Image 1 (tube, rainbow, N blue to C red):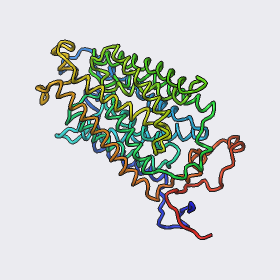
Image 2 (tube, rainbow, N blue to C red):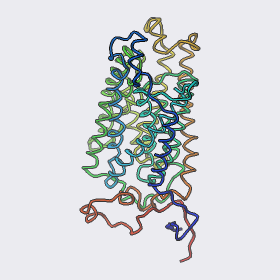
Image 3 (spheres, rainbow, N blue to C red):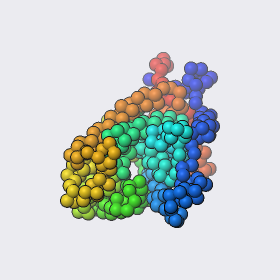
Length: 473
C-alpha cells in the first residue's frame, strides 16, 4: 500500500477545494447574511440617546459595554493568543499553530454571531439579529469549542478541513447550547459542559475517525524543542491569568461575577500546586515534565466553569483545583498512552475530562443549594428561577445540570463522528503521513529555516493520506 498524490492531472475525481476559493466565497456569504440579518442592539445603536431618555438612564456608564468590554477583551486575548501559543510546542508547526488558530477564530466568530443570533436573539417581528458586546463574548466562547477540537487534530489536517470542521462545530455548538441553556435551563457560565466537554469530545471523535495507522512516519516532527515549549508556556500563562474573566464574563453583574472570579482564581492556584507535585512524583528523577505544566495547570479553570458563580465557597474551589491537577496530570501520564486516539494536544486531559468533572461539580453544587446559604432572592437570581422555571427545585435543577452534561457529550461524540466521516472524503488536500506536523506543507518558511531543516520528502504539496491504491511494483 502506497500513498498516491491525487491531483487534477492524475485523478479528475479528486476535486481540490483550495483555501483562497473557500475564504473568498465564505466571506462574501458572510457579508450577504450580515446585511440581511445583523443589526446593532439598542445599546450600540445611535438611538441609545433616545433609549436613555425613555428609560430614565442618566449616564452612559449604564451601557453594557462598560460592564462587559474588559471581560470581552480578556476572553479575546485567550482565544487568539492563549490558545494559539499553547499549541506551538511542536518543533516545526508553530506557524500552523498560531496562524490556523487565527484563521479558525476569525472564520468561526462570524458564523457564531449568526447561529447564536438565530437561536437566542432573533426578533420575530423584524427577523433581525441584534448584537452587542455580550454577543461578541458568546461568539468567542463558541469559537473556543472549535479551537479545543483543533488541538486533537493539530498538524494532521489541511486548512480547508479546519474550516469545514469549524463550520459544523459552530453549528453543533449553537444547537447544544440552546438545548442546555434554554430548554434544560442548566447554568454553565464558564462553559465546562457547553464549551469544554463538547469541544473536547468533538475533537476526539474527529481524530478517532481520521486515525492514521502510519502516523509514525512523521515521528521526527512530533517532538518539541526548548524554544517551542517556551512559546507554548506563553499561551499557558495568558490562559491561566485570564481564566477568571472567561468564567465570569457573562455572569450576572455584581455578586455573581465577583464570586466567579474569586472561585476561579483560587481553583487555578490550587491546580498548579498539585500538577507540580504529581509531575515530579511521576519521574524517577523527580524532575518536572513541561507538558504537564503547560496543560494540567489549566484544568481547574475548565472544571470550575459550571459552578464558578455558585456558592461553592473558597475552600470548595481549592478542593476542585486540588483534584483536577491530580486527575489531569495522571491522564497525561497513563490515559494518553492507552487510548488509541491520536490526540496531538492532549485535549482529553485538559478539556474533555475536566469538563465532565465540571459538569458533575455543577450538578452536585446545584442540588445541594439551600435558601439558608443563598438567601431566597439569591437562589432565584443564581439559578434564574423565574418565568417558566419559577417552581423548579434545586434537586430538579441538579438533575437538569447532569442532563446538560450528557447532551454535550452526545453532541460532541456523535457530531464529531459524522464530521470526521465528512473530513475523510478525498477532496480536502490533507498532508501525507510522512509530512504531518510540518509547516512547510502549507507555509512559506524563512530561507534560513529551509537551509537547516531536516531531510523532507520532495512531495510536500497537498496530498491525501486517505487514498491508498494497491500498486504492483
